[in-house]
Image (cartoon, rainbow over all chains, first blue to last red; front, side, top):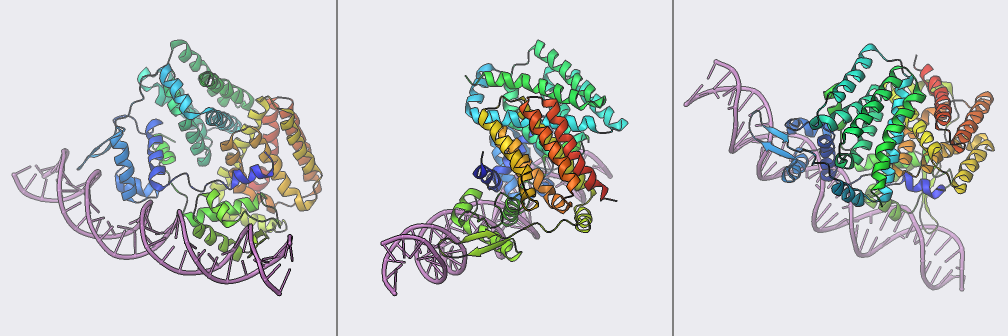
Length: 241
Length: 241
DNA sequence: GATCAATGGTCTGAGACTAGCCCAATCAAC
DNA sequence: GTTGATTGGGCTAGTCTCAGACCATTGATC
């Protein structure tokens, strides 16, 4: 935590992996966050490669890997494309314990702390902002979408609600950071059983977050997000034993 | 801000540039954040290349570019190395207006929002944490270092104080994110004249931040950071006219 | 002054990545 | 059925990047 610690912080690896690996990560993020829902398809290869800033060759390698791993179904011809087939496996405490162990104590702690900081920071900023009617509507719509969701769509709409907060701040960088923070723990979140009592509890917390933001109360927004995230964080940490 | 907005968020470029460009960016960050102070030297090429995960060839290209741009002085032989020669230019409102204009309204707003969110998020998380005596000492030491600084060292020690908050949370990811957020606006901050009244005001705010964190009061910590950052943010935004 | 360890400077061959082109398959529209 | 637009599949030549070896310079130590 001294001077040399800051050297480690800044002079860290410039790249997390080669282009192929980073592309797979990014596509997995899109799939697991539900940006492209099951049955939906990715943009055409040429367009997607341009967006990701990589060559089609590299993109196709990544798509092939995900296809072989069962995340995508690729079809040729007009109206073809790479269709998402992934569906989170049924929540299972055994899987959860396994996933938490694979991640490791330090990494899990880092990921949870990071998510707490950026999401509560985003909520607090948004609560400080003058919101337009459109923005208020969007937040409320995401909230009611989530409350009306079946178990099928719950994860995806929960993600959508959380990410909307960061997106509404208008900071692209903040939005990507929150998306990144969530995707780091998405496998773990997906493995948490969705019990009725928990969902009701979450619904109350989601409402509290939205109300604090709409009321322009950053302290309340901060507290509501912190309380909400600490709940799942404590649950995950408990599996570290 | 609808579904397609999220596609843009996640399916963004995988890489910000080629290895050379990203390396230059990273070294500049280390220099401008004062991780390596003026007169200090970067680690030997072989070690630095390994840390950054790039080849020596690429690293050397980046170093040569920074050397030609006047940031580094490279000397051969034992006890040689790449020595930092950079020193922020004298603060000047004209430069500031120029720099703000070059950055652009949207990008500036994004950067300021991002910084506010992550730094206040970090402070809030740290205020929620049980701190060891060592951690409390470090925070207080950084604070007194800053208060005892001459104009010469002020920027660097201000950065050190701010980044320490994120580092003390124990989340590497959060520390790098805060460092990134600050480096995005460091040129602008450096161009702000250091007036006596402003420095006194900042000193009070820094103290308030540290006290709130040490008192374990996340709401106060959040407010103190927000107030502190909003001051400079408002100043920068004023130059957008 | 000679020695030698540490450091930057340079070269080469191999692999990763890209841009651009053309081929093959599919299916709505006619 | 034929056509044509759209999409995935595949190839090639060229550039970027890397790993590793070897050379050149420096200056503290002896």
